[in-house]
Image (spheres, rainbow, N blue to C red):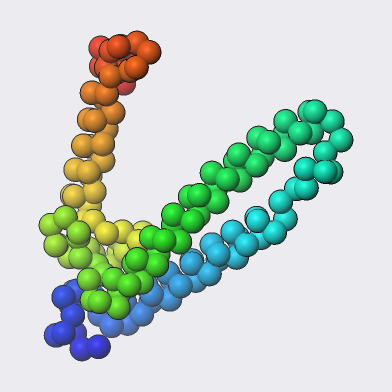
Length: 146
């Protein structure tokens, strides 16, 4: 893979290899954790009392949320690995700017530059701020919550 052929030529080949290795290790670690969590789930027949059952249900809900987050991250890592193969890795999906190596080391699945990510988060916060509560019929701003 020559540096002139890649769109993400701001990244050196050894930097891309370092990031790819990091992503592969993270993916393997997550898949092992997911496997362990599903393998060692509690058997409902082992519950002795209602309190045990309630605690078990709460733990199962937390495990399900964690598994969902981990599954989402595995998908994001897989997409990032594909972006490495196509030479798109390290380019902002919004403005096509170079994402610095330092940012990618801190967050290897980053697909936006800092400026676009901050704009995206501000937009999300703004939408939340303007969202009308179904029960109160007011925005968070009107309600004085945010």
